[in-house]
Amino acid sequence: MLSDVQTHMRGRDMIDTQDWTREEIETVLDVAFELKRQRALGISHAILRDRVLAMLFFYSSTRTRASFEAGMAQLGGHAQFIESRTTQIAHGDTPKEIGEILGRYNDGIAIRNVDWGLGNAYIRAVAEASRVPVLNMQCDLYHPHQALADLMTMIEKLGDPRGRTLDVSWAYAASYQKPISVPQSLILLATQFGMNVRLVHPPEFELMPDVVEQAKENARASRGSLELMSGFEDGFRGADVVYAKSWGALLTTTDEAEGAKIIDQYQDWITDGRRMAMASDGAIFMHPLPADRGVEVTDEVIDGPQSAVYDQAENRLHAQKAVMALTMG
Image (cartoon, rainbow, N blue to C red; front, side, top):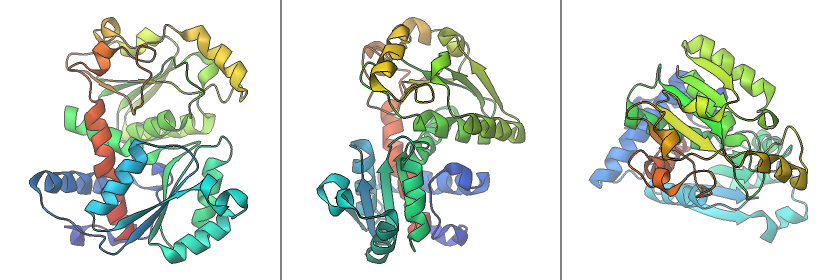
């Protein structure tokens, strides 16, 4: 299956989808859909037999760990779980040492590090030292594999994404200041594929200006659009996809107590049935999970017929398998 695809993807890092062309992302999606079909038919695709992926976590995980481990097993390889706090990484192993050594032991390195101001720089430092592909399982700035699964899900549910309206909205959450990596990767990839993106948030919850400018440039090149909005309900009206989740006011304050005070001002930013009814006929609701139920979104929406969250979660597996097959094959 992979013999006809572009072999220059082998050895490539996946840290930010902006590092890949639209044509390369389309190849990833084509392979992801094919692997998903094969999985449904029970067809083995042990493309990565005897290959090992080191998975380094600085942050807790459910779907990311489970989907990468399952994906490597289904591709015929092995995923090696490494937790930073229970290894000598917490005691002084440098990014260069991790890249050099794990790159010699393994055929790929995947890292999850969402520490604000550190995560992306750490992953890129490891990649600089590594002789094998480095995959970003989420950092402080980007969550590329989540965005790939999101786009895959939108294509499955709605067809060609070009011209479709995507509401990427902040939502209230009482738990903690969540990373901005999900909305940043999502607006970058959706605008690359010609979607009309609405970025909706209160004034304290801006995304990084250079990311927003890059998304605007993507939209100009793809004939899509990026509209910045501050009214929660305005984002719903006529939208084909409602993607409402919380992220922290990290560009306003990194103090958790101050962040919590800011977040508490917007407790009414919750997706409920009345608001979903403002979206277009056939609109879908998406969320990367875990969701703060009854806070970010009501049960009637996340468990209702418009919800695509479980298909979205499943597609993490297939999108990641495609990236691993193309880069580690």
